[in-house]
Image 1 (cartoon, rainbow, N blue to C red):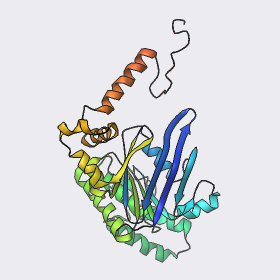
Image 2 (image 1 turned 180 degrees about the vertical axis):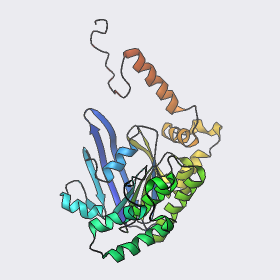
Image 3 (image 1 turned 30 degrees about the vertical axis):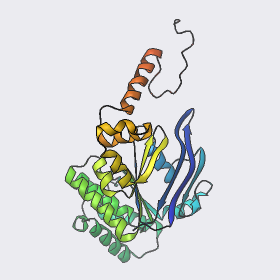
Image 4 (image 1 turned 45 degrees about the vertical axis):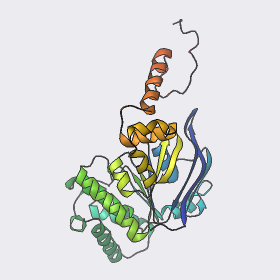
Length: 296
């Protein structure tokens, strides 16, 4: 159950790599006990936003606060203390292949606590039981399935009892049944432990299952933020009602429905033609005609 405690707060966030602006003017809050799903098309900036939140990138402008502390100007030692209070489930699970499942889960406890070995062993069993893998503790990652690796990665992310969990495409590459199991785990962890979950995904079935609130990114900006029901209402609108929507909401609806026609594809087709006509490589935001195009 969400509370009024703000655990993630983003204000005026922008990120540029050289001359390319990837994110612009992002504002977002995430409360204790709620799941916020960040979605959008490829290249919209959602992975960059995740990396900024976990401290892998530094904002160009704006601020990110985790658990009430602005992480922008923190010394490494201070940020390490905040890192202990959040966990990350990477897209691949990111398990160490030379370690058993149990050793992977135990690693953060060994590195960041003074717990006795027997206590760590007990905690590992508890975390693996949460994800249904206690009997597989002694197996290597190569001996378990992709879905089990995701669950093991989630157990490791939970090892330090974090207040915030970040998920990078948790359902990617999984069959529908395993994906549904991961969704249920996310829901159970959020409800049982009051964890704030930030989930980056483009899987719509998963998004509408787990989200309390949803964020739609497009071209590096926040197109829409709102409760799941608000996005669901847009998704369920009949075709004849679409023209009455704002252009932003039409973009949201096309993405949610996976429709082949709409403003996203019209814009993409126009951009492809412009790039082909002017000789601009994909990803180049310049609109200038090359100097002396007729010369070699």
